[in-house]
Image 1: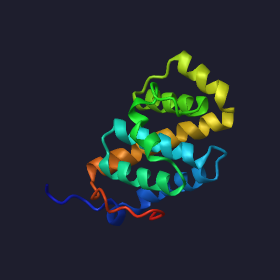
Image 2: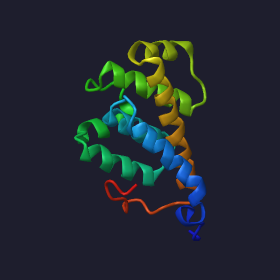
Image 3: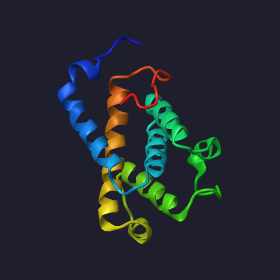
Image 4: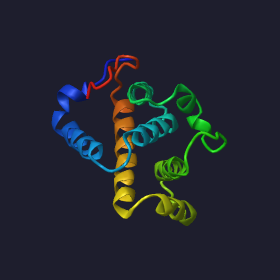
Amino acid sequence: METRINVFEKGQKAVSTLFGISGYLKKSSIEKQLLELVDFRVSQINSCAYCLDMHAKEARAIGETEQRLYGLSAWREAPYYTQRERAALAWAEALTACTVPDEIYNEVKKEFSDDEMIDLTLAVTSINTWNRINLAFPNTPGTYKVGQF
């Protein structure tokens, strides 16, 4: 593959806005482990190898199990996700597909406050943006170090 633009060198102003969102989300009331699961699941859907590597490493560093990461693409059938996690994953999948049926909205509403729903939505849209940036201007999967960003 031909070398593409290094977005971290040439697009510092643009990506700094995304880092600002990430900083905001780190302070949100949504559990960090849950945010990592959402980031990992959306990255699976979008086939972003760099983000999968990053979020697997970050999730493992904060105590996520390999079993739960391996089973994430089949979370509906796996017994080891909480109802809150299931709601967040359904929300993430729906938003990534750009369609949010009322039944998913209502399930999420049972598990998350209004502010948390807004933050969860921001998290999903943010990882979708990162996935697309990394697909357009790839970084080498496997090179990410925990806490790098």
